[in-house]
Image (cartoon, rainbow, N blue to C red; front, side):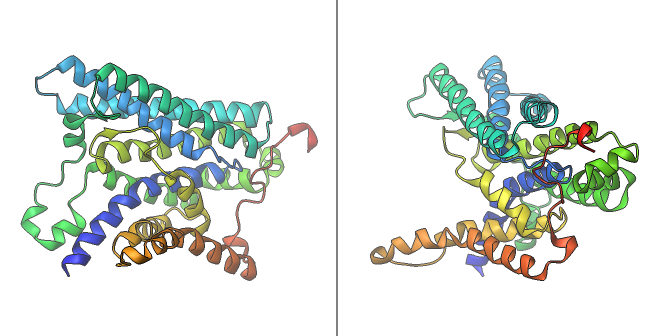
Length: 331
């Protein structure tokens, strides 16, 4: 029981960046844009929040930080940085009609390089002994749990012991699912992703929907990067520490069959699978098995992809125009 209580909160904490990334990518892909630059977007969102928090904490010095400013400054910087990444991607693939796969990979390379450059610069400014930045004051506010969590025992530990960004990720996923399924805006967005020529003929502004969906999707994904640094990593920024979570979030989109509400449970499952190797005893003589356990989330994704392809149900397939640029004159 103690092992279970320790595993589930860690799995959920691991799942939140994946859920942010998955939800953001679903919004983007529903417009027909395949944004493989998601890892770079999450990286830029993380470093943008770190930059804002770093200069705010330095301006305060040894004094106490204002809780509202400690949240709003990194949050605003994260949203701005992520939105700019979404705008750049949209301009390249929607306006200039660049290849989406190549553009996405270039955005990932750019985002990681951007984060490492400014992260390294901040490390030099902080004159830290270790190659990392510690934003403990801001992190403590981001990680503040609900006040009644400790009073509920194991139930509080399982459900209410997380920072506000964890609950924000769940709320955003539910809102996205509702908008896509139940609203006129969601219907228009899905029609743009399925057949932009038909949507255009029906009077829907295809360009506006593609831009909006991509930018909003990038902002949501960027919040995953901010959560990872401020909450999961306890305010510690180290270059190249984000790992492959961005790519795992893209895999999660396929696993959830482009359904944001299903992404909540799927993200927790993937979060658990991602850290499962830490809880499986292998012994020193079988350490190489842990590397195999790390492959489990990707193997599960491939199995799901095979089964959905065999069933060939239309509702389980990606948007029909996903990855294909729309040129109005070709209608």
